[in-house]
Length: 121
Image 1: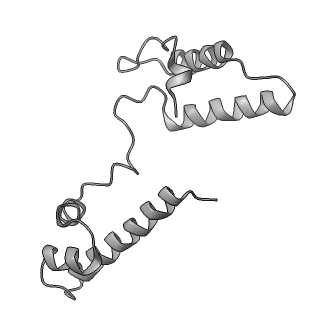
Image 2 (image 1 turned 135 degrees about the vertical axis):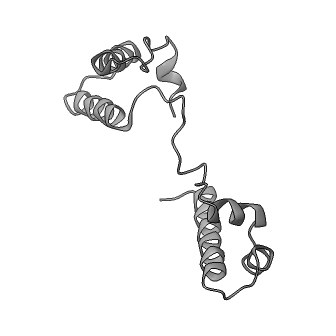
């Protein structure tokens, strides 16, 4: 179930999408009119129309693992849990390091930090 903050964010995102559609279809004449009509930020409408995505839906540039690697890590943790083995922090960090090492490449960070597991949200 969504929290009230999540519901509010979804509601705002919906109003923003409606404002953009109204502007693009000519139902409102300006970004300002769309913002006023749909109770959203004019600057946000301008950014979205110019192709800049929302921060909520974007991926951090300094992300350590790729999405597929993260999903593999999550599945591994869930598998441990299904087998009655607690996923210990050191083991999770070691598995993340293994995934990182397997990817390799010059743009790949070389090390999973000691506190990485606790920092991940």
